[in-house]
Image 1: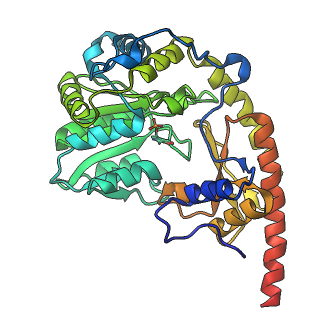
Image 2: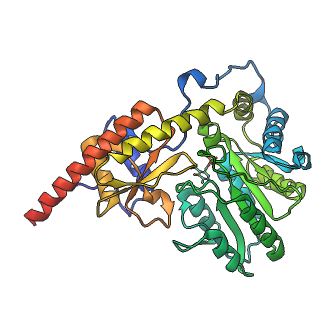
Image 3: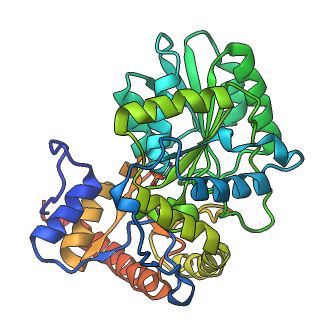
Amino acid sequence: MQRITSEHSPLSFLSQRLAYANQNGIEALNLVENVPVWPDAARPKDRQRDSNDMFRYAPAEGESRLRQLLLDRERSKAGNDPYLLGENNLLVTNGATQAFALVLALVEPTRRKILCQNSTFVGMASLMRSRGFSVVHCPRGIDAVTWMAENLSNDVAAIYLNTPHNPTGCAVPKDDILSLAALAERYRLELIVDAVYEDYVFDGLDASIPRLPHCDHFFLINSVSKNYGSPGLRIGWVVASKKNIDRLTGVLERECVAVCSIAQSRAADVLENGNVSLVHHVERNRKGVFEALRSVRGGAFASTSAGTQVMLQCEVDDIEAFADYSLSKYGLILATARNYANIASQSVRIPLGDDPRKTSEGIKRLSDSLQAYADDHIYSERLC
Ligand SMILES: Cc1ncc(COP(=O)(O)O)c(C=O)c1O
């Protein structure tokens, strides 16, 4: 069978598939994004402001309108004592990715390990590795918080906690986050909470995340990419103590002067619009996706109560070979387990918040492709 992807390419498997479709003029159905897609009627307007935004630098800490809107959001999430949070606990960044990169610049460099849950979105894992840290995953089948608490040492620089987690949709209880924050203080290491799926919580699950602006070892990173369905803006933010926000602002200024002023202005519009209809869209859609996946022969999944994706375990021997096959035979581009560090399963990621018609067509093609792959595979084994 013709392979599209190769271990020797510097690109990720997903990028190789996207490039293949592009270069070969294949109008492929792209099922890879777990960014929720706004229903047309609710999509925030891209207001064409007659503004001077592009003719000036934004302040390094972020535009004041956006910061005020972010502060309102953060206070609404903060629970008991929202007014502990002030504007000087916030920094606007280029997405959660840059937020994480900036926080990593503050992490004690003589300590080498970062403890993570049992799998990690590959973008964040490779960022940690590129900074020279060793990414240590919790062994499967063990409670990650207990494992983290038992594995702290002077060699641990940070804990990276993604909640709700991509891709499992599991949420870390608030009390567990507070216990880890106390341990982080004690061991003088950083607890970094990645909350980019914070608003996608369903079925009455309690997944609230504390804000700890008085704590010098606690960082929360977030963005409009998933929570507001606007990844193209590249707008994110960090919530941390004033001392740390000052230090992070210095790093951001040194590295990129400021975040794009036009993008900040658009992000402020998006925040003002709110994300209620986007979250409802995912909530409505996910039930239909779970239903459709139940009828996929050769596929199995565990439904989740949070997040914007579900992993479908496929009965194939090599998920990468299968995803190449699906693209070449069925014009379907899939995100596979390769998108995550430390996932061993033969699984593909199914979005819960994409356009329902597109998702349904994608699942149909996936189902046909699984069936045909099994038939072809048996046939070629018999020929050998
Ligand atoms: C867990 C997690 N963190 C961070 C990011 C990156 O977010 P951003 O687009 O804000 O850089 C992603 C994107 O998929 C993600 O899944």
